[in-house]
Image (cartoon, rainbow, N blue to C red; front, side, top):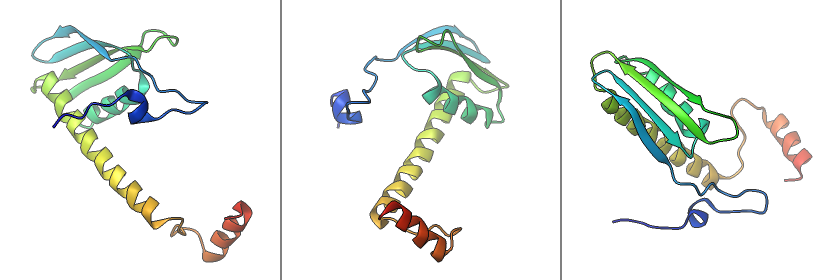
Length: 137
């Protein structure tokens, strides 16, 4: 099943926030047995810092970094160097790990939303009541 929806339907929109509507354009600069270098137009830190961190957690990855071409433009250049694994496969695996992690976070967040406002375990009942009173909740 393929679900197609507009970007405003997916992300929503408010008077003070508008989603980016630019499509990601990815171009491969270099691809070899142990190196992958690519450019992405349309995104910066949001996705690629998470990808960089996840790649660096992989023991088969020697190096993963990106640079932003200019602060005014949403363009990055990303480099991955690996020991023995194909660098594109390392990127695919890292993306899948990120997806699983966000799925877990989403489930936990939705469970917390359903539970409503609760007292965190590190705050005493008295402090929590005072906090809620200060918010008029």
